[in-house]
Image (tube, rainbow over all chains, first blue to last red; front, side, top):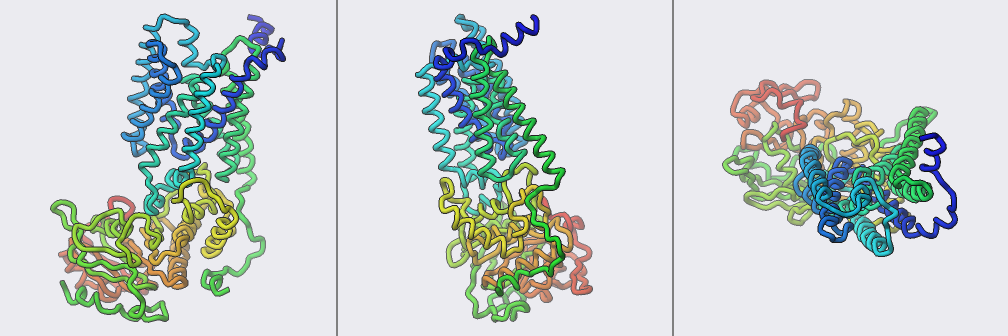
Length: 304
Length: 289
């Protein structure tokens, strides 16, 4: 393959104007998934669930492969698989260490099941491959409305539990003392995470969900600690990766996922650079008193 | 029980730190005939205790003596085997606004997406459902709390970058958010250096005096708070003793509690207990209690 062939395969903008409207649904789906992924990703980071996301994705893959085999709806199959896996993890692993071993056990089992179902499946090979590596082109309007519906459930769910979930994720001990139902929240969150993983698989495939659910949030955390800004940046980065990746992929002959993962990786590397630069400059937001002042005690303050 | 614990229902001695005699203040914590045991093992039995508003009350004892269970009982996270416990006039329950809980210092991951003000903000309304509305009012309240604990200078610093002492100041602010009647501290000075131990214990004492709230300080080490403590509950060997520190922290009383001879030395206003059965107890309270 010459370099020219490579470039034609990877980036090809011939007839772009005609292609674009055809992929309207795919682009819309990408935007929705970016929104969901960026939103839930911040909590995934806060709760240290990166490995769990990967484990859920493999079970989701098994569910989708089973649906493909029996001729059922693939999105539904992957939803069932990932929600089940997420709830099992939520129930079994309370502490991070237990959780990781449970994931380590479940993940290969799920992947093995998926491979079994795919091996039995007699249909088009592209469908098989798509489950693992992504297939946004396959999104039609039925799939789009299903994605949108599930996304609405996730977003609404997250908005309802936003504050207590933040409390329980960052500061579980105090949250529990303040009467926050930490365990119930954890289960609800795992349920929402399961849905999000199933959605992401439709675009980037089971092997690459982390690019959508982890990388954007991890990148945002490099450059800010403001909870609001983290969420906004994370959503922005995720949408940039999905929509940008789909736009770049339209003309080429390659699946969409490498574009999405590359974009999100580049965003992460840039943010990491910015973060490192800032830390070196010692910018933490602390107000440093230049002149030594008399320390003010609390009793004096309250007397004011 | 001994003469000391029979004196517990009487008014506590005039507090060295508050101008108001504690006897005239209402009881904010009230345990009546409280017992707690797990299976065969009885942690404490027949505990009658009233902690008054404005009082600085220390709960001492070795690991496994039931200190942490005592704390959980007040927080409503642990039911009593027998008896009753009331906090702020209500039966103890989870999430009571009457208790401000100040935990042991723990590190936050450097990439925790919370600044100092966000951590305090969670103390104000983190238990509420939905997203925060009324942002301006919330911000004012958080600023006020940060000011009270002297944390305004690092309000916008990520919690992962704060020192242990700074984090504990935020914990105090967080605990004060509901204007509680009891500040419940769980080894709140552990793993702080001496300077921060003094600063944080003074802050807690000042705040309780300012609000008229009681402090219940659960710790294995009385010295960092010794100048503030009005009364002590000492738990050991399934027994307990309540009284002023100088009454409880004596060779006779502690020897009786531990069932073996221990020596209590007073030096430079500090108290040193020598010859504890479990010599690792003092200094390693982080786990197991």
